[in-house]
Amino acid sequence: MHIGPEIGTQGQHLRISVLALAILGGAVFAAPALADAPAPSALDNGMAMFDSGKLLATGGVTNVEGAGGGGLATWALITGYGTDNGVGVDAHYTYVGLSDYNLQTVGVAIGVMDRVELSYAWSAFDTQQTGAALGLGKGFTFHQNIAGLKVKLFGDAIYDQDAWWPQISAGAQYKATDRSAVIAFVGGKSHDGVDVYLTGTKLFLAQSLLVDITLRETKANQLGFLGFGGDKSNGYSTQFEGSAAYLFRRNLALGAEFRTKPDNLSIAKEDAAFDVFAAYFLNKNFSLTLAYVNLGNIVIHDNQQGVYASLQAGF
Image 1 (cartoon, rainbow, N blue to C red):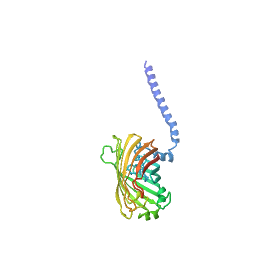
Image 2 (cartoon, one colour):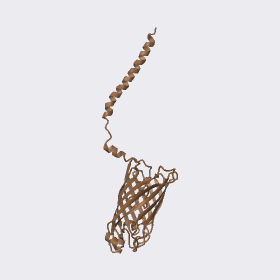
Image 3 (cartoon, rainbow, N blue to C red):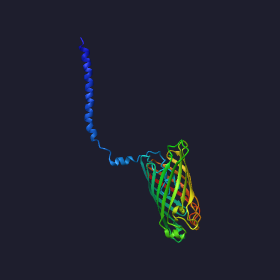
């Protein structure tokens, strides 16, 4: 009379046992397959470092000296899109066509853990017809090498939205120009020198606004192309760089910059420089910056103005 319930109970236990054996068997057979799965290669691990985790446009572009920033000014942002666990690398080509001169620069920069930036730029400043007028020869060109280091000290432009302080970085640039004989002739004291700077960048995400202020200690004449120091002054002076940019869209920024320069040489008064720019970020790998730029007086020509164009590629 109790056979039916006993059979039902035994059947239930049998089903549970079969299910448990199936799960166990699957685990046993799956274990070798998992063990045989290839471990991530060194290349995979290396590429994972380029995480591109920062917001679009927050890596900035590359300025004329190869550092992350705007066109004329250096920003506190670390170049590239690598986060504090990643790395970002970019390369740039910049052309500045002025009334009587032109400037071309190429360079590379790397941002490490969103903390340290290393950069290198090579520049060529073509005097065009002015070289002939000065007795140097038409198209006489100054070449310059610039090695840069920037370190983020504190603050974060992206994540510190509730704080009043900006992201603060400090940096140095070693510059060397090849035309030492000409530099000495015009009164320059050295063909190479070091700039140091302190920069603060504040990003207001809700207002789509970026503001930067940089203080630079420098002896550079015309950004270093006419050497460092001069007959009027051979000491360091504090110069100002300021930027403001508004993001009309997440991939389009419009802004302006202003930069003062030392006036060390009697041969010509050196003026401040300014630009008005538009930066378009196709994606995190490519950006294009176009600007109107005015560098003021350069040797025998006043009001040196023209177009600034810069293409940047990175990952």
